[in-house]
Length: 482
Image 1 (cartoon, rainbow, N blue to C red):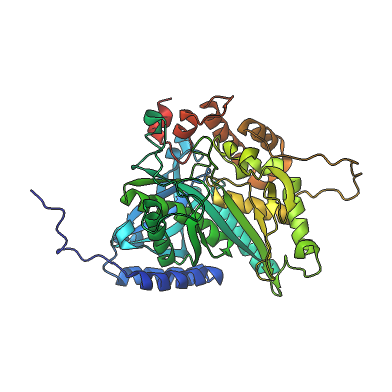
Image 2: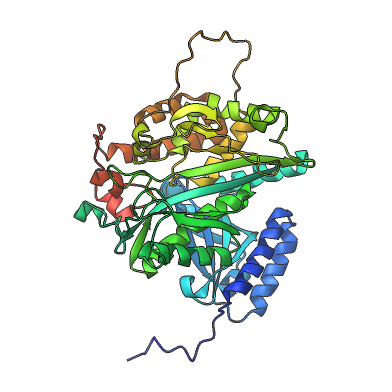
């Protein structure tokens, strides 16, 4: 019998964490400088050809709902191939069966060396962009849209959009806890320590420590890591980055957390509200614009030290908040989190102090002045989310300053359920222009299909169906068994 555990006949690439961090930060610099793609491609191809210890290249891309997909290509095959194709009809929200084949392009600047002890030896990861049959960017691939939009901002206006995300999640006992939820009906907590408090070697702290080490090795430039308010809840913060890098990091963050948790016999979950009666998980999204003279959102004499451009950006997002809500809160379960009993950021307002406001203006200096969009679920498509916020803040319909102001200002709240959010989104001229008619319709159809698999009147308790048919949890087989 063949002994697959023997390793002496193989020599695959394994790089120490300190060297990994150095390599990945160099790769990040290529993206920040918008290094010409042909120059980077030539360098990467030469590296792959010379490094015999690499066996495969993982090409990662995201679907319309933001779920990460990965294809492993044999290195030798990839270097010789004149095109890469995949079956788009197998991915919800992409092509129909009759027009299934799509192409994959490679963003050679977004190249990552992965820790071998977590992702396996002999592999590197690169982000791809989806192309239609005519080699043009595929309309439902929002990574391509974000890349093109931010590159245009940089080249034509000298503006860099900086983004950071505070991504909360829960750690549950046992592997695949979400997929087993339809059988068990509950999640098993592994820690009840609470905010900032857990013993140094309890399972939650061990997980956070291990995941943070992987993030640092991948060039995330971590800032702080800690348990969150809810039992078994965690958050790991890392430095802001240009928008496309930040969106890629969100996808990698969730991927590596899931992988580290699984290797420890647990599950990292990014459901917005997995537990009844417990604070949900958010993804506070911080945005600022930088120009040749520094932070464009900073004004020492402005209200809350925010510049006129910063306030215009903020007011456009608030003005279109109902129309964007389905993009920011992408699932039935996400509207559980917008419950005002749990510090829900569901008020359509901006404030430096009120954490119920959709947008907070954090206390910061010139370099850190930004807006923090708090009403975002961790299951949102990060590329669509950041693209939508940037374009809305810069180009979206603005409130009319000449309109008469009501004597009594009524509090505006975000939609409290996915059906109300779909209604606002479907009627929105701006959302249709933002996403394009085809993607606008496809996205709403996907949200509607997910909603129809769940009870319309949700009640107070988490239901099996909202976990079972959540877009980050379900698979094609389970979906088709409905």
